[in-house]
Amino acid sequence: MSELKKRLSSILESPKHNTEEKLEKVCHLLDQEIPYFNWTGFYFKNGDKDELILGPYVGAPTDHTIIPYGKGICGQVAISNETFVVPDVHEESNYLSCSIDTKAEIVVPIFKDGKNIGQIDIDSHTIDPFTQEDRELLEWLCNEVSKIL
Image 1 (spheres, rainbow, N blue to C red):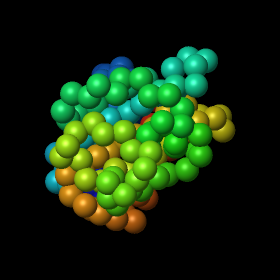
Image 2: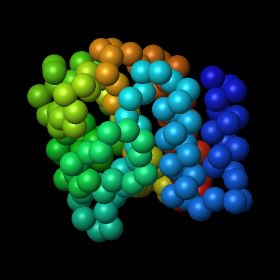
Image 3: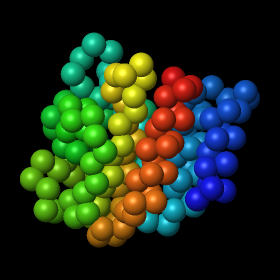
C-alpha cells in the first residue's frame, strides 16, 4: 500500500493538472490497482443545498448525479460524517442501486476546515471485499484530497 500511497500523492501534488483532472487520475489509479474496486468516484456538497453532486469517477455511467442528504449510503455519510462500509448492499435497507452488479460499497467522507464537503464512493462486484487496509488507505486519501480542494 505504501507504493500506492506514493503514486496517489504524486498525482495530488502534480502542478500540471487541475483539481478535477487529479481526482479523475486518482479514480483511474485505484480502479487499476485494486481489482475489486469496480466503480470509484467522488461526490461533493452541492453549494448550499443538502445534496451531493457527482464529481469525477471511473466505472459504469450512473443515474445518481444528485443524491439528497440521507438517501442511500452516500447520503447517509453526508449526515453521519463517518466512513460507512457495506459488506452486502442487499442487506442495507437505504441502499440506492446504481448497478445490478454492485454487491458491496464503501463511502469515506472528505473534511475541509472541519466540514464534510464530499466523499469518495467505491462499489464492488464482490461481496465483503473491503479490508481494514482499504479503509485506512481511503481515509488517508480523503485527508490528502482535502488539501487540494
